[in-house]
Image (cartoon, rainbow, N blue to C red; front, side):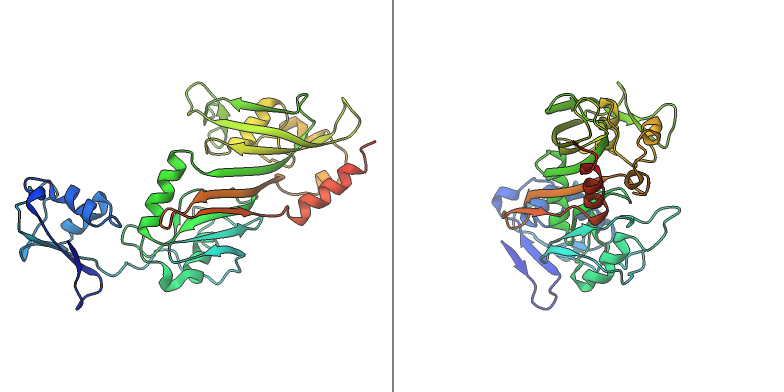
Length: 327
């Protein structure tokens, strides 16, 4: 039985029953305290936060004896390294475990060389504040997927360890519904199709990804929503892409592999970027890619959630301009 120690709201005591005799303490504790992973419990043991009958236990492989009382004390989450920054966010959903936002164009997700601050992480630290219960013992949002700086749309981030673990599992099992809208150069001949082609780091340019036999399996299902320009000589198309996997730059790489790179893509459009003379295409200033739908089962409550984001004005403006050249 798990007991919350009333004098310390972040301390738990569990008494090993006869069935726990001979079990590894880390495995048994993870089953008794499902909000804590085995790796987290191992770290707590190394920090001196776990005792057995009052004596420190630093060995995750220690075998239990029936009747012993195991106490786990959760330290206060360490301050996050990135600084909280008051950056406006469009929040689509939020509870104590996770937050869903509509990311604008130009917002970098995570601090990195060249973008040390003014990122989504900085914004979430400020927005969530004390609501971040700690991911791996650190007061930070759990980033489980990313959108490129110049890709807009729906994103989810974890606020608790339990939600973080659950979301990571959902993504790894490909149990997340993700749909993107992309404006591409030209138009595929077919109405719909699937690209099943592995993606890995490009051997020619390490900044780019590419379809390569040495890459990881990547699957994108696509459907043409609208074509722009004379039939057979289309200048562009609006394509809906559903991700079965989630590799870096997956849609951008797969659309290029199809021969229809995303309009405005600085890495993959290549010569195609120079073909259209339409001013609206040239003035877009970013890749025309938008994460329009995100659906998943809440990793803590079990509720089925679905979120949609409308196309931003720069993409709707480009679509209007493209329709003017369509007979």
